[in-house]
Length: 422
Image (cartoon, rainbow, N blue to C red; front, side):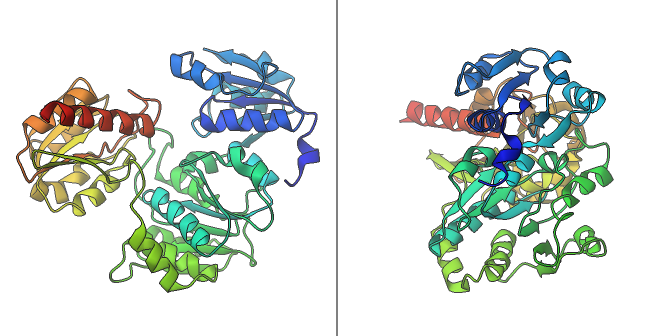
């Protein structure tokens, strides 16, 4: 690893006890730091996460944040889910404690070549495929970020010859300072995360951090068909490479092919990887067919555009299960494709009334108190030849720890239903 001497012997507070927080705390402890972790929740899942800390010497604060946990520290590391106005962030600024994000920390230590991928939709698929084409070329690749393992959990295993395919969200990019990927990719830009960002300008500003430190030795890959992204080229110092949808390929595959060209990887090898690729868990994932009804798990779809993309890839009539924690989106955007394909919408979670209002009576809608109940209702309202699509358009945090837990619950409900029908 690089820059290890800088981190040794420091007193560090890690804010947030999700996967990246755990990985970060363990990494810093192994580097010889005095580590404390604080999380304002105290739930069964948080305590399970805390059990993965490698030492009892790591101090732990659950159910609250206190100023004393921050005041005497040399460094505060924030996890992606921690907003800029959170108390520990405010206290760090008040006490003049250095503040960085988990991906910034990992990048400072990382000796490998980093390819960073962001965008409102498609990040997971593109990040995964970049890792797969690197491996197919015989190069060692780590796929990190919001998928797989946290960046800070893998960085100790990396060498200068390795590559990192890193999925980064606007949350992770907010607090970066020196982060400088060799190749940055912005797939698209659409309305998202307005529960976190005050407006679209602030959301775009966070996305721009992916290239702010890049120079003429690096590359920025941008979607030429996105009007907002094309305008960004007026602000960059880095060489820009454009991609657009290639006939016969998806937009995600077209972006990957462009990155492959920069890495010296042949098109034929990429096409072979695309052909063998079975998809990403929780992203348009086939679960089961029950009495001719197909069930698809798209729990990773936390935007309207993601749900629309899933709809456009389904040829059958659709019973849609949606809802969760609202992110300030306009759910009427589902109507364009939905009027033709959706025969029933079943809503769960905090956002269900807002979604119902946005649909304005143009689609049949009913509620469910739980995801399990929604699966049962969806099956009862389906006919052979239909598809039950779970594409929430919302974040998971009202009912689940993350989209992965939500997707697992959906699959368990479907497979339980299948057993009952056998």
